[in-house]
Length: 166
Image 1 (spheres, one colour):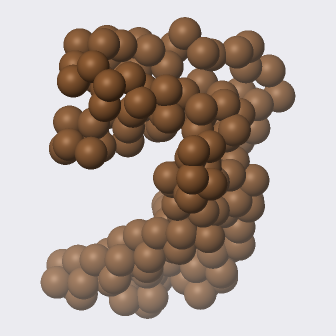
Image 2: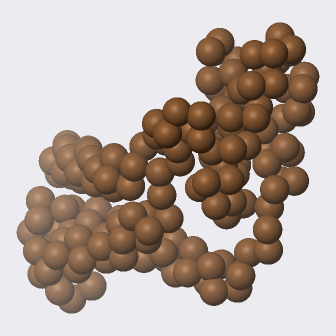
């Protein structure tokens, strides 16, 4: 698989997931693209157009509940990041965060991290290649692990910034 095809596959999978295409169908679509490219020698963009536009053709209706859940998870994620960042600054500067101890703000921020993680666990179902049965996307555990590592790194950078600005 050329780099063009690998990049197109990654972009296509991301776009298909954003359009709520079922994982089984995503695997079939990617397999069809890869087979066509291998047989014809065309690039994926030549054959199918930009990945986002091609994926839009497979989009189904997005239920209102899914949109509301997405907005809710985004708000929780923002609140989580805000509380953790302010909690870290509060710990370093020995100040309260909106009237609560900095440690409590950190704990509440960490608890607010749980719903987005559960949402990602439910949303990030692995996509398998129907030709081989092998996964072509990471499983939900890898996604949650990367989200958690990002949060820890962000907290570490915030801690350093708080120490340096004191």
